[in-house]
Figure 1: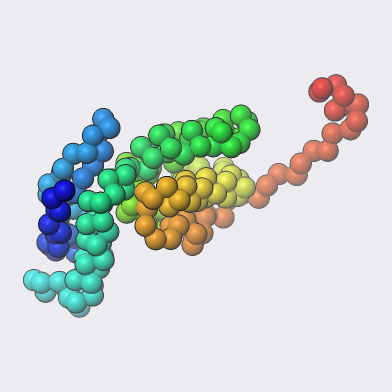
Figure 2: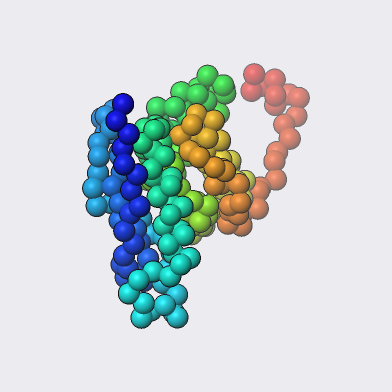
Length: 203
């Protein structure tokens, strides 16, 4: 099989960021499609580097690290999946086999209504801790009534998705959700203890 030539990408300034332009694979309708001219943010341009035309050494290092991951996709096409594609083709069927129907219903609801609109189009391979934490805090801002326990549940769901992705070879490295700190949220409400007659009535 012909070995594809590894690419190094091209670093450019776009607005206040150093970005790398590159080509990569994507999964569309079950097929791998080669995409040209893709752009990935590496880091913000520091104030002392505003006049630079070429990226400083630390940005070149970030570019090399990112492109190493991109080049690995050539040998592992499953790493081109978006989070949404992976969840719906792999993670949801997996939890349907492992968990109770009530748990699956809860997880599916949170994924569909809160997580998928915010991260479903991102690549499993490239998703970062910073992106995950920003998303969690965005959810907290848009839902100020949300309980702390719910926010921690969302974090747990995300962590489970990436744990599965790593185990299935769809993502290299560590779980990006491990260091995410969710927003504070409202305290949990006191739980109500049912009496024995109430339990019998419910049954």
